[in-house]
Image (cartoon, rainbow, N blue to C red):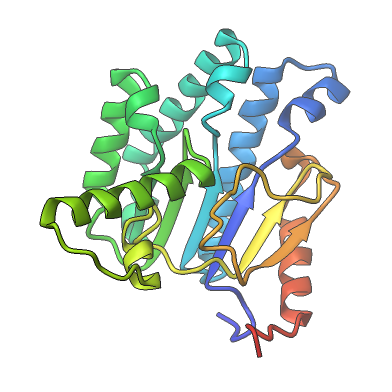
Length: 237
């Protein structure tokens, strides 16, 4: 891997539904095409030697602001992805660890949640590459959860303690992930949403593209990586 390549790339895949509408397809077909694109880019990142690739799959708001039909369809699409990954020997050969972070255990039906648990267990000893999918996730919820856990621990011991950066990180959903180096958001909206990975993206380079997610292919990814390599990361200096 080039020394200028990111160690941790985070994707915010936006634009599935708008792409589908433009192409005269259903929203769920847009999500299916987006899922295929995500799998392609995961393997592209692995082939490039990028050790951490993370994708935001669903926010908590998706469960309340989208139709029940669309949410059920999305969950089915994700379950199929995880079932495919269970049979994907390439993940084993390439030592890819799969993590699924967020409130999925509370929001997903047992059939899908059980597949996720099985996949995480199967790959937990893999160390070469890391694929993380954030489901039923938003950054504000993550931060509130971390702060609440720290407060409960302090109350249980009856001892006040200074909250350190290390302590806060250790209570995040993303506690086992390094900080993001590059965040790529498709779909033409140049912003982050819902406090997305607010702790881990503090020093990340943010790359926004007008391409909808299903059309953000390997060539577009290469453009983003070239842009990243051209940046001078000051990291507060």
